[in-house]
Image: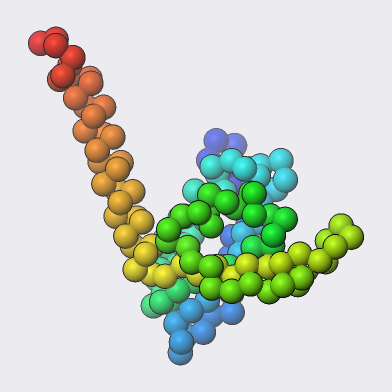
Length: 141
């Protein structure tokens, strides 16, 4: 992933362990620490996920999130389209202790609903902006 403003790399997003028979794959994202918590990573992941679903017949995509990273990814795991399908207890060792790993799944249908809702929200914002520019609803003619 690169910043649109500077074309500077901000992270990586990838799909792997594709199982074409059962129609699922895993996805992962790594973001530079100085770029974490910004919308670039989420936008990059969104574009990539949309690309994967548009070009392959996967039913769902899986991701693993370590407990200590949950604050960074809370916006993702709080979205209704992601479902926690499993927990690997005390699975990863980091900074003197073991951490749980959550396995989250994103189903194609939920992704399509999310993208449709996003398109509708963007269309409504464009309509409101056109109305504001045209003076509709402001009492001016």
